[in-house]
Length: 114
Image (cartoon, rainbow, N blue to C red; front, top):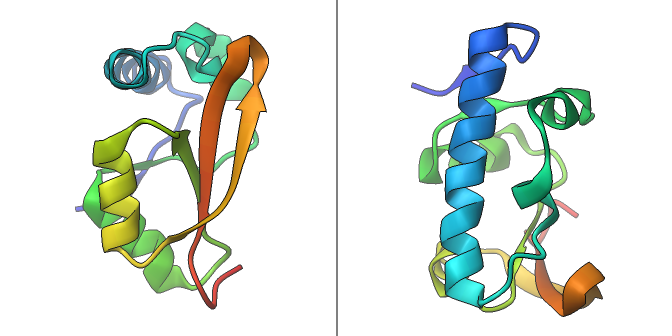
């Protein structure tokens, strides 16, 4: 089940931060860079982001697509598992940018939704 997450709740915010940090650590190892901005965010940084938080994985992306809103995702350009997930769901590479620390970020859009 996909559920909205309330980051005003301390335990939820800490759990989201912990899971994000663990995920970004794995991605950092895959792409050979710790320059991922999310890897260095605090719980308060995460709370302050203007995002709607939902809990899940592949089904989460499928839910966003089903809602029909804009669908743009980003990942380290060398993160093969994430790229395979996004491409498998119909996303196409729209740009690659270099951010602080020389990290290459691949940005994907979903046709018809961007």
